[in-house]
Image (cartoon, rainbow, N blue to C red):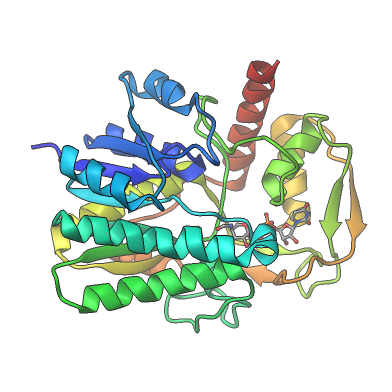
Length: 338
Ligand code: WQD
C-alpha cells in the first residue's frame, strides 16, 4: 500500500523538489500551502515533471480548523513540515511573526497530527541552530545556540519536538539541519523563487549573471579563510530532497527518530562560488568588496558522517552542478516572466 505523505509548504523551494523526489520514490504526496512564499503555478510545473496532477490543499498551518479538516478528510501516513519563514534579516525586523508562524505553526500541526493519530514527522531545521559554530566541520553534537529570531525559532521547534517525542505517544521524528541549499531541478521548471532582491548569495549571483542586478557586494574579504571571504557548505537542493526521502524511509524502517546535518562536508568561499558561477553560466559576474554583514560567521560546513550512517545519505552534486542548474532555472524563469 502506497504511503501517503503530506508536505506543508510543499509548493516552496525545498518542498517542491522534495515532492518530485517522493513521487519518483513511489510515495503518494499531498501538498498543503498558503502560497505566501510560492508561485501559484508550481503545482502545474510539478505535474509536468512527474507526469501526473499534484494534489494541493490551500491552507495555512496557523489555521487549526483547516488542519483538522485535512487530517479528517485525507488518509495521511506521515508529514514533512516545510511551511515556515526562513529569512534571517526579516526575522530581526519581525521576531513575533517568526515565533507565530514557525513555532505556533509547528505546535498547531503536531496537535492536529496527534489528534488524527499521525505521529511520523520529518522537520525542516537549519544549521543556524549551531549559531557561530565553534567546531568545524560541525557535528550534530556541537553546542546549539542562536544569533537571530529565525535561528531561535528553529531551536525552539527542535526542543518542542524533543519533548513531544519524550512524551512517548509513539512519535518518530526526523530533524534535518540544512546547511546552504542552492541550485534547481535539472528540468529548469522549479527553483528558488526569483522575485525581489535576494538576501542569499547564489540567487543574487544568478541575477547579476542574468543582468537583472548590476553588481554583487561581497560582504567582507578579511575573514580568517583561505581567500578572506565567507565559506559555506552549499548543498544541491536535489540532494537535499533525496535526504528527506531517506529520512522518511529510516523512520519507517527503524521506528525511531534522528537529528542529522544535511550538507556536503565541503566549504566553498564567496569568490570560489562567483568563479564557478561565471564558468557555469559563461557570464561575467561583476563584484565589489563591501563591509562584513552583521551576524555572518567566517565559515560554516557540516560533518556529514551521521547522515551517511543513519540515512545512507551522501551528496552527489558538486558546486558546478549547483551553479549550472541555478543558471538554467534563472534563464527559464526570466523567459516565463516575459
Ligand atoms: C552566504 C555567504 C555571506 C549575499 C542563510 C541563513 C541560513 C539558511 C541559508 C535558511 C556569506 C555572503 C551573501 C551577498 C555576500 N537559510 N554573501 N553577498 O547567511 O550562510 O545562510 O541562508 O535556512 O539559515 O542563515 O547564506 O547565502 O546569505 O550567505 O557576500 O549579497 O555569502 O556573507 O558568507 P547564509 P547567504
